[in-house]
Length: 277
Image 1 (cartoon, helix red, strand yellow):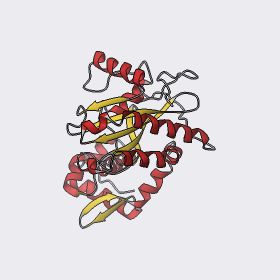
Image 2 (cartoon, one colour):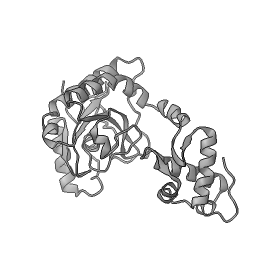
Image 3 (tube, one colour):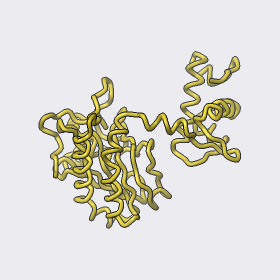
Image 4 (spheres, one colour):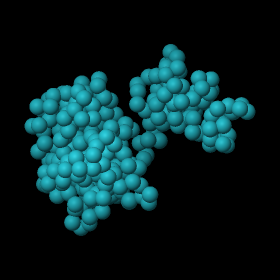
């Protein structure tokens, strides 16, 4: 992808030239995934790369179409977008959730961001969303990893009894919240993850009763979120039903070595979290 000079810190950190270049390129793309357009100085700092190395790698990424350069600022390019659209299970889940997410967003009066989140390597990863004023505070676009302790992350973790507490939570407090989420079939959070935001999430089930995703509504108004719980549960149930009707729906296989937190539940045929239709 790019040449690395002898003594380059990127090469020294990785131990091999090829691995170092890829590691640096992905570090830059991870930073770009969390912002619209970013300048070189901030990109290099956030990716923990020397500015010259970041500039060299960005040039290669731009040439490949993975990154775009606009007036000295950078953003992810169309090639990265195309590759991301092919990731499973997002493709099937996006198809199953497209209309239900729009309807839930409409129920929020256009002031609510609605997202679909899946467990990925111990994190809650957004794979589908609608836009609203919430994006000015926290951009819930596909590819974003939610902060620890989010309502969606809690729903995903609550389906696995062995899941440990999210970062910043005591085991006792996390266990209480998980038990409440299992009992209610939904989870609420008011300002714990991002101080200005409140959210509610409900589980999406596979045919086997596994929790494979979470539908969440996020708003700047906590009072609005308090009224959207049952609507979120109905939306998640619609996504579950749509998913079961797809020819090859994505009930995620459990990956070896994936941490329990954020992993899909394994309780089939009896789901750990109650299905509500």
